[in-house]
Length: 353
Image (cartoon, rainbow, N blue to C red; front, side):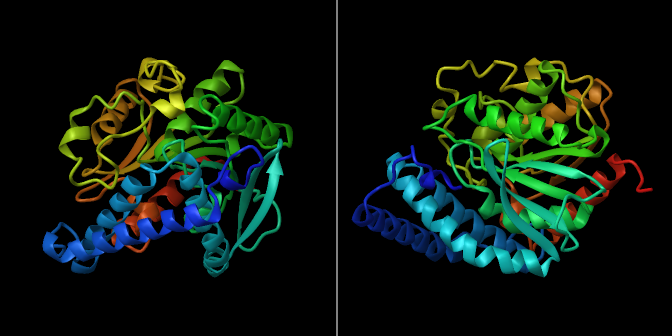
């Protein structure tokens, strides 16, 4: 359930929403028109991928900058429209990957199951709990349908993507409580910890780290593996790459976090794993781009995992921005990530009997 469809979330009136959408379309059109003046053929990838990077960067930067400048109710109206489009476009793409898409609720939290090989129930190989990105304020599982289907197909695992609550209507720890409730439900339903993988991207990656900390506090089992795509490792945004890569990433230069934290200290271990003990983390896979603003925080996170002896598999792609496998799944680099993450997940799980 996208945030704008929740009973306690306000959306804009139809005329105001129409003006907001018109403004968004105008901004994105201008962004596309600027691409030829930015030498889109230059880069470290193939010509088609270089052009794809340039177009995607400009379009997404325009989308994020414009949409996050709107009042919350207009932002939610745009999300509802995008969700409606995804409900039409995504199911055929999921079916083309031989994956079944099933909307349901776990522990009262709405979400979507993705079962590989057109299955109708949870895969015996394993289960991935996937927490979608969106900076803790936007997107929903429907928008991640093709991405989650890729993970299900490459790993042979079922993937559940919960539609957790978002800020500013529901600041920290609302989303964490939703994710924790789903995790407890899965274990109570018989999921073996040895066949459980925790995953997420961007803000969802940060939420996955918060959930790992919360699960330990509640004495729940650790996952067999942790999969992260461009995770928001902490919310201080104090690393050099936040400034150095601001002109190359898709994210807005003025990264927001206040609406999510709502007064919580960004150094709190529940939102910054670098202020916690990482020594007993499960094997961890991280994919990110060297042009993204979170690059240094991710590198520091990986270095700390390596220092304390945690097994890590990292994929730092030159010339790529934030969450590039999600935004450019057709790119050669993204295809390598999907293949690698599938092998990583299978390697974390016990053999099938």
